[in-house]
Amino acid sequence: MKTIGLIGGMSWESSAEYYRIINQQVQKRLGGVHSAKCVMYSVDFAEIETLQHEDRWEEAADILRRAGESLASAGADFFVLCTNTMHQLLPAIEEDMDIPYLHIADATAEKIRERSLRTIGLLGTKFTMEGDFYRGRLESKFRLDVVIPDAEDREIVHNVIYEELVQGKIDADSKSKYLAIVDKLIDAGTEGIILGCTEIGLLIKDGDRAVPFFDTTEIHAEAAVEYALTD
Image (cartoon, helix red, strand yellow):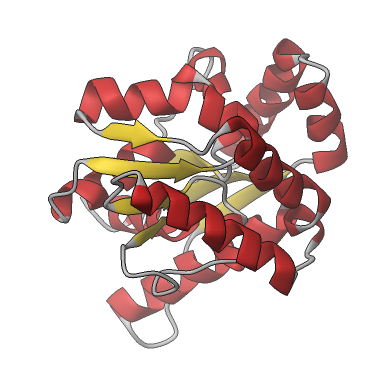
């Protein structure tokens, strides 16, 4: 079994889900009292959140680069970045890393391919929904048609993430707002919805609507286990 490196804390709410899913999947695959060999470096999300909204991405990359180096020094064989938004910094992080990583968008796109879907809705932070690092990768590498909410709805999705979900607040009214936004995406022709922030799966889940929801936290964590257990 390879040792999984986890760069977490963005937020710790979803990082805890990574840890739970990874260990449950290892036990399911290997049986008995097996658990995952893993190392987590958990950052202070307050620092990261400030840098995000002040557009100080190079400083944020420095924090994550140091985290990745710590994982490698601690014996991790590969790493996963337990957040969608910060994947925009992977090019700056990986150039100094001696261990490989698993990209959250790639793992998600493979699951979408398995369902033979093409037009996909994307929910996430405004950085993820509006930036090219995520949508562009899905469109160019996997030939998916990605649809995002309108500007007003993107603001709602973003604010619920930062004002509620990363703080562990699960609100029924916010769930209703999210599902109303999902309904608009479905009306626009989407065949499935990417829960493209690792906290969104705490609020809405596959089965809440007729189209499939692709929970990036669950998908990424399961991909990490598959890689760890593959020779």
